[in-house]
Length: 116
Image (tube, rainbow, N blue to C red):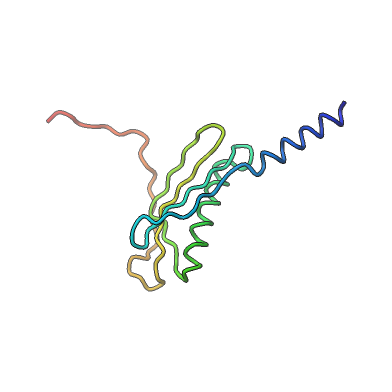
């Protein structure tokens, strides 16, 4: 009975480990793309989804002989999956738009002034 339970646990763990997807790179405009990745919370969760999406973005630009510049990110948790989306550009090494990015966290609260 114990062996049977251990085998069942092993099968469940192995089946969850691969749970997740990385979507295709979508063209959003000139040199601008978006990719999303999802990962089950027991198979790496948010860090794995982020890593998969950014790896896909880097690979896509490298295949074109260009550098990646991530211009925006977002994440979501729809139990039990974490989804990470990256918007990025593939730019030439000497492109003036290629610069060290400065990221600021998105606000968690927005206050709207409706006095006017």
